[in-house]
Picture (cartoon, rainbow, N blue to C red):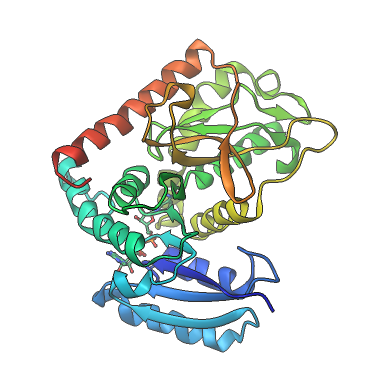
Length: 333
Ligand code: NAX
């Protein structure tokens, strides 16, 4: 039997936590041959709910699940963590200014970053789901001491999957016909779902669906899909967000698929540490086209960026720069 992987999940008493825990324990994230140990971090108000989830996990008798521990102390919860899913955060409330939002999240992600730096395993991989995800990841990374910056990522996989699903629906093709979509920038309304390199059954997607739609209503619909779900369901995206977090970590650890039929190997999207690729300022955690191999994300380089894409990428990256400046001014990083 393999040694268990320790997974710390924050906000474990919340909705996304509840949707993610059972799939992780069933092996959907790390595969059927990797036992897992779960560490659930909550604040005192969320503890009962996390306890209930832990009881139900026990009631599933998952063969891969070697233990569940609960804590409201990051120093305990991140001890020995190989994977950290940071879900609990303070999302923007009505009328909340950017400064207030970032300060509230600094109080969460600063201490969690420090605890990861001191207590997590050497191979720790961090995926931030809680919004504002990119900048929360930046705050945690900048507080985590010696942990390599590449280990801190934020989720844009839900945006990516939404972009695939909506394109497939428009073209009346299965999602498996689609490749080469990229989400660029911030996980926010400024994100840029880019069809320039996307294909449908190998043909340029933009020729199939038309540039007018692909560079207009499509972008808006992907970026505002979260609001659309809230409107229809009367509640935010939960199962799809948990699914995206699981796929992000799965691909990071186990790798993205190899090339088929002689084409380029498929890529996905993730917000990762920039070293200046595609003109994104170094040190930002921004979404790129990525593949994963050997347990590391690699940015897909050399894609052409036309004027339209350049403008969209720059606009979303400018928002990330402004958020970084704000957290620097607030002394959070
Ligand atoms: P819930 O409010 O159901 O759950 C959040 C949980 O986090 C609560 O139980 C709360 O007690 C806990 N929590 C708060 N502060 C904490 C801390 N310092 N340490 C540990 N736990 C803490 O929200 P849920 O629907 O689960 O969503 C969680 C987050 O995901 C939100 O910030 C939301 O904005 C974000 N989302 C991110 C998405 C993405 O693609 N990145 C999409 C879905 C979702 O909107």
